[in-house]
Length: 216
Ligand code: HEC
Image 1 (cartoon, rainbow, N blue to C red):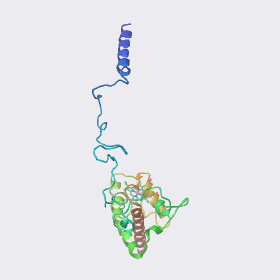
Image 2 (cartoon, rainbow, N blue to C red):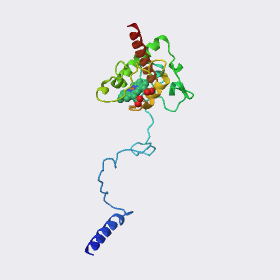
Image 3 (cartoon, rainbow, N blue to C red):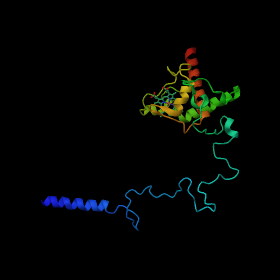
Image 4 (cartoon, rainbow, N blue to C red):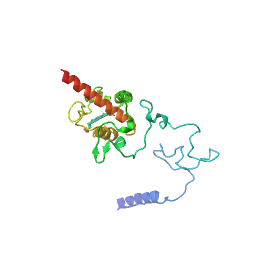
């Protein structure tokens, strides 16, 4: 019976303690156990800001300036900072798909000529070096530095099914965009034109390797 009263008293205190003060207003700030991000010095989207005379929280861009990455002039330039396209467009250039299938070949939107094709491959070489070679290796053989630290199953572009022809460019575009298995997607990091540049460079690596092997 002693224990019953003890338990009864503890439970009663708990219920009053937890439930009794709900809905009440306090003049002191609440006790925060993990206060890290509760109070932030920020404005919610669309809310007014008394700091500015016009009280507009969402500011207009400064006159005569252009947001980075949206330069009209830069759009066709290979090697410049390309524009970051918004998602949701359809068509081969934006998705790598033609209807329900993967397409192959460089899309018309790149408007490639002999000269710009070379620039595109150079751009691809640079971007491949930055984004892909850590895993896939400088030569595309899947022996990048991370493979030595245990990332398993990195694709070797010189083996089937990745060799030219067997593996559509559109699928490579899809893998760069959305990733596959252990490889994460690069949609947020690599603009669309750069993805095509990387594909063009991977094709160059494959052709170079195949030619070297055939010459032996
Ligand atoms: C963090 C390591 C890593 C990086 C960086 C990386 N990959 Fe991969 N990639 C992988 C792994 C692992 C696989 C095997 C995925 C699987 O089959 O599950 C793979 C698979 C692939 C494949 C074959 C997918 C298929 O259809 O089977 C392609 C093509 C590819 N990567 C291209 C790229 C390109 C281009 C880049 C640079 C933009 C890149 N990867 C960056 C790890 C990486």
